[in-house]
Image (tube, rainbow, N blue to C red):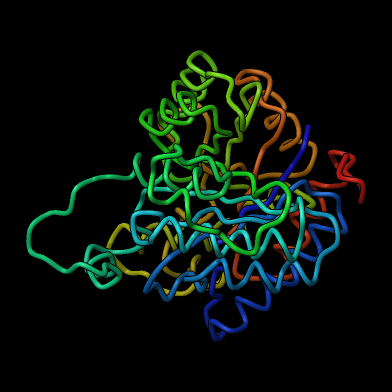
Length: 339
């Protein structure tokens, strides 16, 4: 089974956001050396918790610092942008790093309603139409130069022109996104760490309704889940305390930097080290030793017919984050050839 990384560029308490971006670059190099399949960077706006608001810029640096790992967005929030501009950005990345670029797109805002309003070019009081499906089709047409002959955009050159194109992935956490990816014949990444309840139904729907396309001949789905791996279950549970407090604060509308374990234990008290309570079939976050996580990953992958799992790890200590991905890579037998 392949393993991949999604990085939200978390900002540790006591450090500047610039440190979080440097951590992203270091983790990408580490994942490349360990044999992870792909490295995606998320887009979030106006959040002290997460540093990256422009993954397309950070990807240019990450590509220069890595050698073989696929790099991409997890994802670009397409409703904010012109499909042509996104196509140009990722064609440029594709020219710099041929056959290594993934363009993951989503329809979520990646921030608050006010942030979304500020990002819009057309600021009107009335609700804007939800034209994400049309945007997505237009983006695909720009990337693959396949507008109908009579379409005015047929005459537009999306530069830099070169063979092939970035792989477009549809991201989502709902049944709508699963159905849309299946109907368009696109690879699909489900954000289990955001919305774990419909995971099984969404992946099964995607497989059942998938239609082969010029982009993909058979379904390819990824589950993106949270995970913290340490030498022992106890160590992993302790590291998880930071993410637990982050989530509690987020639920209160407090988007603060990632707290230390000590801060989390002080604020959460006895709850800090108790097992997480999940109502979903699989937990939002998998926490434990390498052997424990390998068994749980493999059970999930077998049940959902997955060949790849993507992991996001949120801890305060960057060295512990590097170590978590290293332990998983060794347990799964990854190597620099990506196998």
